Image 1 (cartoon, helix red, strand yellow):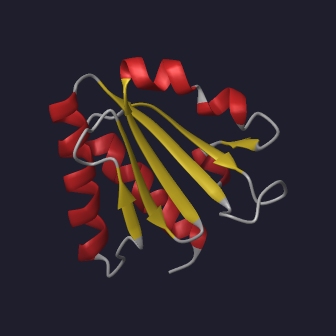
Image 2 (cartoon, one colour; image 1 turned 90 degrees about the horizontal axis):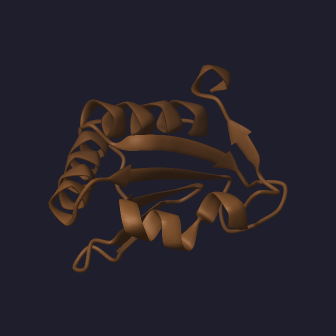
Length: 115
């Protein structure tokens, strides 16, 4: 599965399970850690857990497994590493506080239609 297909599958899973304000940032030109960040929000910790659980399940169904996960226990910011794609799921307050979109503003915002 190529990165574009994986981005679509990740976006679809998050969207279907009511993630809020899903953003994709292409960081390939400014970082070697990954090609894309997917950033999404949830209204509370239970929803953060649910989004991560559904995403993991949906990706396993298509044969994709994350390399690493961080923050699941506290669930205010969960990072799921899918190799060239890193998924960040935040509760609302943590997303505002960490403001990854601002920190990575040199990356390119990606519209799903472009993927």
